[in-house]
Length: 556
Ligand code: ACM
Figure 1: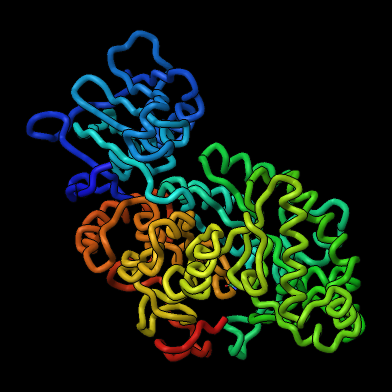
Figure 2 (figure 1 turned 180 degrees about the vertical axis):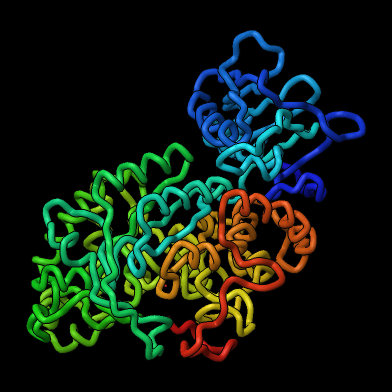
């Protein structure tokens, strides 16, 4: 693609910005009018995208967008694999509209689908509604030609459904929101100390017991407040199949995360034999009701390994993703230090210490997944003590883990907490709800660069892409998730998709101008984003302590 990307003028307010855009008619302006006679010519392999257009744009406009009969007015959908080289990747697309035709050509079905997202944005905010504005019959489409392809192939969003459960419909809605922003990896954080959210048929207590906690800490962990009511829920295997299929229709891969050997108290509460029974009475444990990092971690025993192999067998049946996330972060070692069983394992395996025991644990599942044609991905702690080739790393504690991983030849997803942890507050003011973590504004996210300058071009090829992480300790419902996630996810999407200049040279003012239209799209979609100005729907809650703003680590 072009070395000097052209960014759209504010009157073509696309987000994320495409590679190239130009007027396809002299003088620009409206090129095409879509109305009740406009039909879709869906050539081979494009049927699912045509269906998506009818289901979304058709519903929003009230237009039938019927299959082509013999009308002159049409939207032509094509898959043209040869375009991949020209556009810069097989997720690329070309969209052109003049007075006679709108054509969307994808280098693949995914490329065509991303082109369809651009098509919807070009129709205007009303194309994002669930039902039409009454009386409107015609939709003007600008006479533009767009060529576009993503910078990164991993454009992810993590949603933590363990700390606060999001019912299936909410997850499907988030998949739609991801698609509208051309994001394509949904990192599904399904298990943690505070809840287990996926039915595993051979271990029914995970759904029965591990999916509910008796109460929740309100605010971050230093808060004195409790919400004294049970919280929980889980996805049945049918729910999961529906989520995975819904995502696939939107060219989104669902990467499940089953967190081991830390962040496992909920599982231990359901199956006490998984814990360090020679250190504590694990039968007395319940699903954790506080935030932070529990010291109740898995025991490094054959019982545990066989149990989780059983879990992963069912997980692999449900999730076709090549990558399977095993967590691996924040495994506290106090119990292992006290456990005779753990010490015996360390000496039997000839390991140096508990850190190497964690590597051994992760390495077991690395090999186990590789033998089944999958690839392990885990948080950057899994690098400590060595990692099998083929395993990949989510770099969250900054860039360091990702740099080390890329230099060692591992693939990396960059998601440093300092930039893209969207549970962190987005302004320093008193009116931010439950102010945890760093302040990271919309502009900070816009200026986030996933590839650190320390990497050579060869090493940088290991950066698969980037991901925004939405942890939900203090996001107790969908409205709070929306508020933290938007508008920053729009900035993040542009970082992940568009070939932006270096951070200091990025045109944030131009992005904000385009955001004016994007807020109207989000309004039409019913997203409870943080408003850019004026009164906010959330006030800092009385009695929930805040924290100093800068220079402190996140305080989840
Ligand atoms: C993490 O935030 N512990 C991955």
